[in-house]
Image 1 (tube, helix red, strand yellow):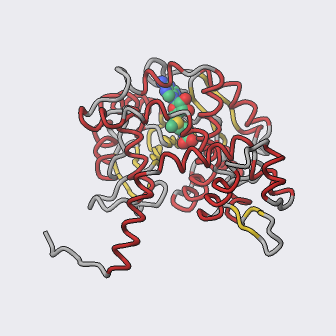
Image 2 (cartoon, rainbow, N blue to C red):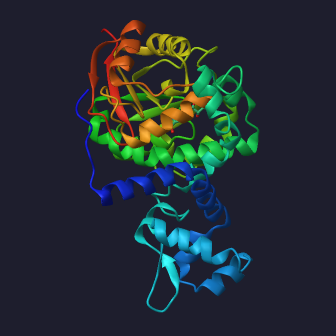
Image 3 (cartoon, protein in one colour):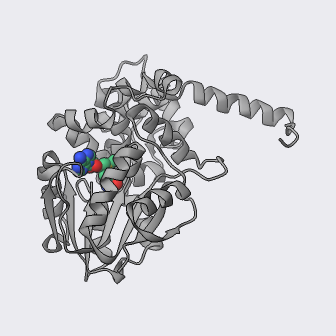
Length: 343
Ligand SMILES: C[S@@+](CC[C@H](N)C(=O)[O-])C[C@H]1O[C@@H](n2cnc3c(N)ncnc32)[C@H](O)[C@@H]1O
């Protein structure tokens, strides 16, 4: 253990406020989710408003408005102009306005759906068990149509950014047909197809995802190159005839035993010589983060999965039969590990 680093008084004071932010993170998340839900950023994108106009537009009590606006202005999504009106900052215009192609608000709403689960994190940390007996089997099996929609929207928001980064790491132009296992509504597949015009794709996910996925597929410029096949990767064989297979934020949902079952089916389905691509939040081998994968690892603790280190993903791929394991640098959102099915 190295010597403890001593901080200047001002550094220590800012560390105190970072600790405060850790302590009251739940209230910050709830406030942002409320603003997303009422469409505050969508409204401000049409034009700046003063505090009274914001109160009237959303029927907010005058007791609430100053705290809410000061919170948003202090955290970065809105700013107050010289005329006293509040408008979106560029960050809100790009990431929190629903019509923006880089919208990530769905993720905030996704987390709202996890609050019951998150309340059980202390028990999960203490016992190592998920908050429901069968973990993710309970979650994915128990979604009603509304929950399915908010989950899919949250994943789509994340996937748009994940796909942009993934395309810089993996050459999808070397493939002919991509199978996106647990591909949800196609956030990854549709972005990849738009970037790689010669590629065809199949999205495989639970039957309950089908309608939502087909809506997204119809709206995409790549709609004639993708189809959706419903099924479960625990009980159904995966579609054949693919030389690339993507598992994006799928393995981290599950414990090792379930990952082995999923990877066995992936190995069986992929063509000889084909490439499996695993992308999801991964932890650095030296435990130093990064911030997002480390925090999302806690969500996986309570839900029943696990954010792993790249070497562990390689081990899982190798025990399923894949070889030639390659790993990217550990990234701020996701990392990628690829393997090859022997030819
Ligand atoms: C965390 S999401 C990842 C979605 C997408 N790959 C992405 O990165 O945006 C996990 C996906 O696995 C799907 N899934 C869960 N259990 C499944 C099963 N037994 N068979 C097929 N898909 C399943 C869910 O419906 C969901 O779309």
